[in-house]
Image (cartoon, rainbow, N blue to C red):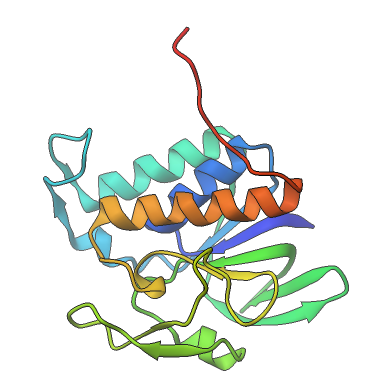
Length: 186
C-alpha cells in the first residue's frame, strides 16, 4: 500500500514525488514515458541556466528516487475505489494507494473514464482540464490534480511548483497538520 501514487513523471509528477518521498511517504510514480517535456529545450527555469527537457525529467526523477520514490513505466488503464484507498491498474499490474495525484499533462482520458469532473481549459492548445478546488482536490475524495491537467501554465517551472504545492496539501492531509519542507544549510 502506497501513501501517494502519482500518474505522470514529468516536472509536475516528479516534483510531487520529491516532496512526498522527502516527507517520508511511500510514493509510487507511474509514467508512460510520453511527457511533452521530453521534446523541450528549457532556458526559463529558475536555478537552471539551460537544460534539455529529457535531462530535466531525468534529474527530477533521480531527486525523487533519492528519497525513496518508486517509479514504474506503464500506462494506467483504470483506477477503482478500494477498501482503504484506490486500486490503480496498469496493463500488467495493480497497485494500491491511499491517495492519487493526476499529473498527466494534457491528457484527461483516464480522468474522464473514472468519473472525474472536467472543464474547458484556458491555456492555448489545452482543450480540457480537471475541475479542482483550490487545494487540488477532485470530485472524488483522495484523488488530486496538479500541473497542466489542473489548468496551470504548461511552463516547467510552474507545473513543477504546482506539483509541489499539491503534494504538500496531500502530505498535510495525511499528517493531520500543515506540512512544511524547509532545510537549513549545514
